[in-house]
Structures are given as structure tokens and as C-alpha cells.
Image 1: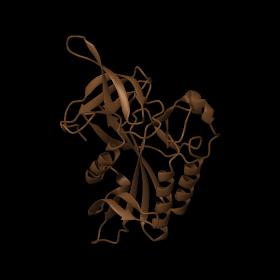
Image 2: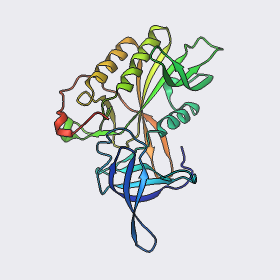
Image 3: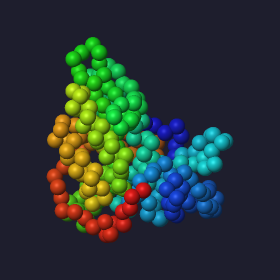
Image 4: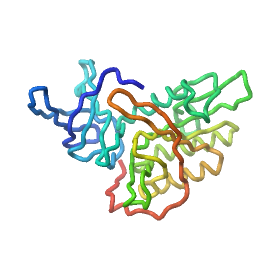
Length: 263
């Protein structure tokens, strides 16, 4: 997915009120100024909201927007890039589905977005179907992963976890996917790994233990759990490769140590 324009660069001052961030930008004459931009991410953004980090943002031409600039990418303290705009995950996955980059989901003739389904009145991100074959309808739910855990915290490097805050909505989606398997359909939870440093994905049991339990139950019940990584630059973000998902139960981490909270 190419950005409509080359992103502009700045330095993060702070992220606050969930949807806002202050950054510092420098013009061609070397003069610095502060700018408030929109933050399209409702999560805790742990590790992706550190003051002093390099950020990239886009600019909208819509005159009705109070904050015309949108935070898109951040460079982490480890030097990796993370796409913090969670709204882009579905666009990336759709592009990958159309281009047949997700091996497990190839061969469907039809793709529908935001289809209502389930007893809990959800909307599935993508419904894949093919009336001309014996393929079962496939319900695909997408989650963006940017929570990075270093070796000093979990004993091995390059671990990504989901969610980064308690997610009752994510729990609901897992229940709905399990119900679709019971109804005879395919159901897939696809982690879109929007962090170039993440090489393996696990449930964040220390953040949302209920989600971790439901994710493992979903896998046991036949929900397919996939993860795909991305290449990230200020010009484009693209899904490129499969990433392993580890559902083994690990020793719990301290909530107090990391300062997580439900948002």
C-alpha cells in the first residue's frame, strides 16, 4: 500500500487523550515548531509512544478536519519501524488477499468487507467465498500487532504480542469466529504485524488473560490463527511474509512492571 504522498517527518513530544500527539517539526531554514496531529490508535501503544522518537505523518486536504495531520509511522528505540495507524491494517490485508500474498487464503473468487454476522452483532473484516467451488465461506478477522517485547523482558528477542490493552471487543470477535466454525465455515484470525522488529507473535496474557484463553480455545476449536509481517517505509507499507504464532503458555509478566491499563 503506497501512501498518497511522501510522509513528512518529525519528533514525538507526547501522545495524549488517546487520539492526539504533539510533535516537533523543523523547516528548511532550521526553525522548529510544535504541531498537534491525530493519533489513529486506541491502544496503549506501549513502546510506540516514547518522547524523542522519530515519527512520520500524512496531511489531509480536507478543510473540515480540525487536525489535518495523521500519525502513520514511528521509529522505535531499537531502530525498527512500526505502523501505528491501525486503520491501515485492513487495507494492507485486502491488498495482500487480492495479490494472493497470503498463501492460506488463496483461491477465493469473491471478497466482501464489513459483513454483519454472528449472535453478538459483529462485522467481519473480510468474508471470502466462491460459489463455483466446494470451498467453505471463510470469515477473516484482522488485528494489528505493534507491541514489541525485547529479550530482556521475555527471554528471547523479537516477540510481538496482542492485545496491548484489555480488549473486550477482541474477545467478542474470538467467540464469533468459534461460532462460525461450529456452523461449518472457515474462520481465520489474522495478525497483521505492523512492526519490522517482530519475528514471532504470542497472546499478551499479562495484559488480557481472558483474550489469551479465548485465543487458545479458538485454535483448539478449529479457528485458524495466522500472522503476516510487513515492510514499512515512509513511502509504502506492504505485507511480505508469514510470521510464526506461538500459543504455548509462558510465565506471566507483571502488569505493574509495564504499566498496562484497559483503554
